[in-house]
Image 1 (tube, rainbow, N blue to C red):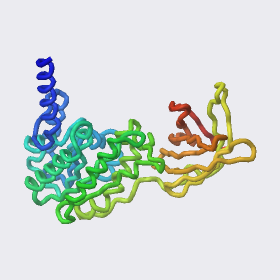
Image 2 (image 1 turned 30 degrees about the horizontal axis):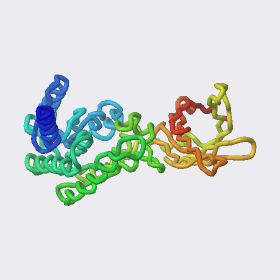
Image 3 (image 1 turned 180 degrees about the horizontal axis):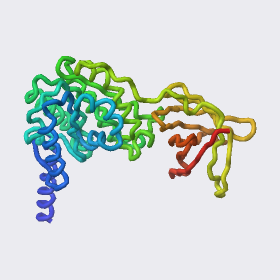
Length: 347
């Protein structure tokens, strides 16, 4: 038993040492990461002298090269921005990258930083604050003429959860790093969350990484500050103002027995806001709540009362494709989430 206890103590000590390493620069050992780090260093070597903006972070930042590619081309390619995001990175990895090539020879006007979510599974809020603070201080020391735009860590997880709560606590303290002279703060994670507290798949399909619509929200949310610091003309939002939803629709989904069931839908789009109603039977309608559209992605909820006084909540999301609505409706029945595909065509 003594040996088991000693081994347990050794294992615990090793884990706590790792968990407390948010401010100690360390690399990662996997070949993919080493390749990405080398790629970023080459990117900096080739284009760093002309870069006006740096984006620093983890996979969510790296995702500008994937789901966010079109938005990046509109907002940041003209500013010769460099993406320094690496999937899976924690604060300690970013600190190591700063010391090993990522900042060599660059003199940007602005560095946009969003980091810490990968630390949130095993580091305490205080440790994560220390890690992000160390990153901001390192940027200020290495690039004294560069302004820092620090972003609140985005929410994660489909529903309310403890990890989201920790991130909010972290953001409350990180906000205090902003002096509005050299370091600025932006926190717009609430824009990814519906009124019922859930994160729609139209924003984050895996409830962590962003869709093109979410990257558009990111760009729009910081554009005023970016243009102010860079000193150029503010780029107008690429979100279409075209009314894609207003009108009468016929929605179809499979009923309990597997047969398709159709019912009228009336939608009204006002900018990014969506209102409307779903027919239930011949003389009753259910109102749409929390409706919004970003690009061609939409989401809303519908509530139906039950005989016992409770409500069934249907969370609907999807996209507009060739004039047709295609999506998924989710609800919870007897504690189990049930998802059903649905479509709608104009009446």
